[in-house]
Length: 121
Image (cartoon, rainbow, N blue to C red):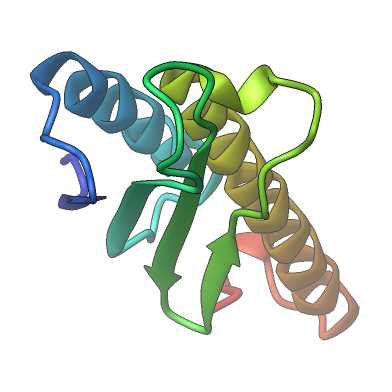
């Protein structure tokens, strides 16, 4: 079952291709955290001064039992975030790393309590 993915565009028109890219990446988070309940991604421009060269700011949020996770950062000065696809991939990858760490900690706690790791809820 795929999780619901909510995508919000602030200050720019929605892009079906970018939405599809975000949805595919977000659904991969379920491999890391099978109990994931929802994922929200916000895409906005960090600058509105140029016709080209504007950087994107992407924030990603995930909900699962036991925690809320947020990823995203202010745009780098290195031009990588001028591509919305790169910016969204980096934000969702950062979220994936947080979920992996959370799942590892949860598994280790369950093992130290003597429970099988599947009962870590």
